[in-house]
Image (tube, rainbow, N blue to C red):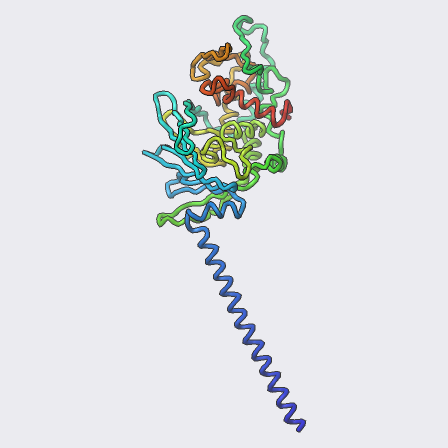
Length: 395
C-alpha cells in the first residue's frame, strides 16, 4: 500500500513537471510570438509616409524625410506640423503644410518672390534677394590667425586719419533703434563679442530651448524614402543644441547670434509644440542660407547643414568687413528709399563695426519695407529678438 502511494505520488509529481515544462514552452512561444508581433507592428508604423506624422508626435522628435536624390520631401515635427515640398527642374516650387498654409516661390530678375497663402487666400507677398558669398575653405588655425591680424590692424589704425569726413556719416534709426550699431564688435568695442564662441554652452543652449518650450528642444531624425516608396530611419540624429554649440566653436561665432538668426529667419525658437511657424520652410532653410535669386542651392538644405553653413557665412562676412569703420553699406532695402508715416528709410547705411556690417551683408535690410507702415523684419527684427532674449548681454 505504501509502495502504491509512493508510485502515485511520483506519477503526480512527474505530470506536474510535464505540465510546468509544457506551460513554460507555450508561454515562451507566446512571448516570442508577441514580441515578433510587436516588432512587426513597430516596423509597420514607420514604413509609410502617412504614419510619420503620428510617429514624430508620439516619440517627441522632429523628422526630415529625404528622397534618393538627397532632396527633402517632407518635414514632420514634434508639434504635429507636416510640411511637403514640391520641385520643378530641380528648384523649389512650393511648400505647404497641414495647417492650411502654402508658399509659392517665383523667380524674378533679381529676386525670388514669395507668395504666402492661408486656406487658399493670399495673405502675404514679399521679395527675397539672397546673394551667396563664396570664400576659400580655411582651417580653424588659419582662421584664428586671420582674426588676430584683422584685430591688430584695427588697433594700429589711427581713426583720425580716416578718409571718411564726419559729415559723410549719418545715423540711421528704425523705431528709435540706432541701426548703425547693433552688434558688440570691433573696432568700436574693446572685445569682439560678436565672435565670442563661448557665450553659451551646449547644456545652456538646451536649457534655453527647454525654457522657451521650443521644438528645438527635441532632436531631429533623418529619414529616407527608398525606390519602393517605403521610409526608413537612417539612424542619424541631430541635437539642435549640440549642432549650434559645435558650429559656434568651429567657426568662432557667438551662439547667441546663431539663435537670434534662427528665430529671425524661420521662427524656430518661438515655435512651441502645437503652433505653426510664420514660414512653412522651417528646417529646410532654418537660417535662410542657400535661397538665391535663381533658386535653391543644392546641398544647403537641412537643419545641421543650415546651422554649419549659416554660421560659417556669418564669420566669413565678419572677416570681410572693412577694417576702417564707419563704413558705407549701400543697396539695402532692395536698393529702395521709401518714406512711411513721415519717416524716410534710405537705401544705404553707415555701419560702425564689423559685426553690424556682417549682419547687413547676411540680410541687406534695415527693416522689411514690404511690411510698412508696420515696422518689422530685417536687422531691426534681429535686434529686437536679441534684446528680447538677452538684453545687452553678449557674453
